[in-house]
Length: 178
Image (cartoon, helix red, strand yellow):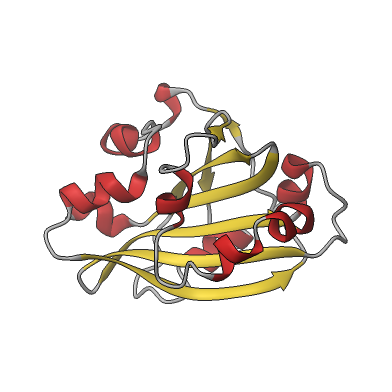
């Protein structure tokens, strides 16, 4: 499929040098942004909805591509400027087991949930170079002024009490330029 995202295991040589510290971060990206932002950090909630996952998301989560999943889309902000677009995909079984935790997030970072719970485990980081026309690229730049030649992304599976969710994080050019 021409517009499919090609995820690969994390290899530093694949990633632009200025993004290596961001893409290789195994801890909370939210905390890292809070410490490096020039202006106040915030989470801009774009959507919470039930959708069908992208093909690579259903494959990563080992669910049917027709299964509805809970999607949470946010932009991680440095003042008025978005540095990261994040799309979290939560299978129905995971959502139902932890519904109150997801429903109460609002404009709070998902990292607050994931990195403060000692039972949460993170899977391997995968990376992808997104190009115009790919779904995640188009979702990430929907509210942006610029259409860069490419965007770099990472994703990881997280396990909450053994239940999976998938976090996609797309690094916007403003992160590098700021």
